[in-house]
Figure 1: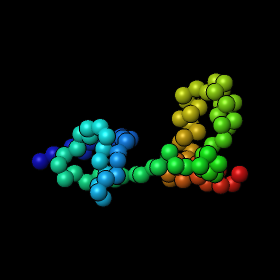
Figure 2: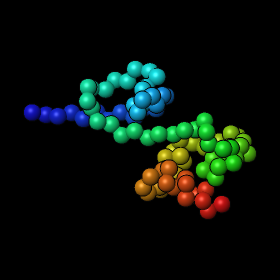
Figure 3: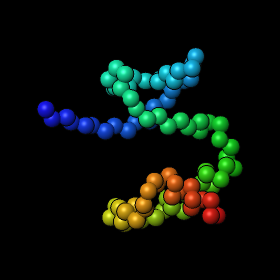
Amino acid sequence: MSVKYIFMEKTVQAVYEGGVLRPLEPIQLEERQEVTVTISDEGNIPREHPLLAPPDEWAGAAADDISLDEVRHALSTIHGSLSETIIEERRDR
């Protein structure tokens, strides 16, 4: 018997009620399927939090003319988790 694995990653909004996270939109999952949940409370993060990029950091990047190949090359040099790399980079500032 052949088992086919399909990996899905999706961000959905949810409400925490009565000890249960309730998605605000339908999610295509099998009954009792185990998943990994990442919780982000973006609305309550202060703007001065060190993990948030200052607005001027992205203003200059909007005019950059970077090719897809350059982006792929830069991403290929990141070992481990992209989020860990960004957190470490911002911690060094």
